[in-house]
Structures are given as C-alpha cells and as structure tokens.
Image (cartoon, rainbow, N blue to C red; front, side):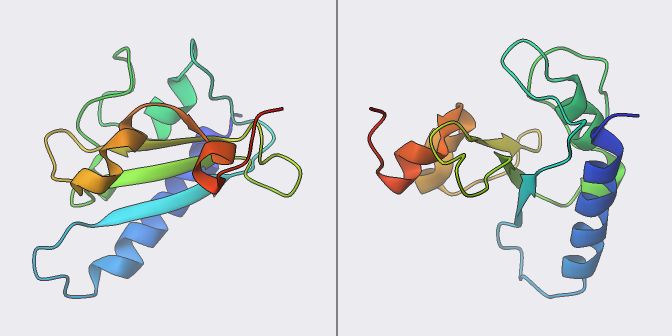
Length: 124
C-alpha cells in the first residue's frame, strides 16, 4: 500500500462535499496537507501524486486531466507533511486539472515551492 489511496479518497470526499455548494462557475481549488507515512513525492518520483489526482497515472510528469472524482476541480494545492518543525523543508505545489483556470496570483505554485518561502522564513 502507498499513500496515494488515502489521498485520493480524501480528495474525492472533499470534492463531493464542496460540489454541493453553488460556486457560480468560480475557480474551485482544494488544499491538502499530505502526512501519510507511505506517501512519496519528490522530484524524480511523482507516481503517488499521479495515482491520487490524474485520470492517466501511467503518464510521466505532473500535468494532465484529473480523475473523474476530481473532474470539476480546477486544481489541488498540495503540502507535503507541513507540520511544526518541517517549515523549512515542506514542499508546496499547485497541480492544475488539464487546461482549467487558476488565479494568476497562484501561478507561481505550479512550480515546486518550499513552505519556508511562503512564510517568509530564511533558509539559514
């Protein structure tokens, strides 16, 4: 077992719960902090991310259309184990659903970031 299944279930549940609200065609983003001990997400291995989010997890990279349960979600902002003490190393990234619209002010999150940078902490 890996951490992609619990993440996929949690995201599907959030998407279903929030789909009951009327967003009037506004952007729908989900933020999630992944703390599962079996979840692996690093530069050279995105298979757990792909299994949790994307319709075609076998493809390479971090782009594509989301799975059916997340089809109406514009994007997922993923924090990797963002807990007290991990501020300096915790990764943050926005994964976009295909060609969905995201706010321009969040476009920098389409590239890997560190939580320390978002919090304005120095990397000493």
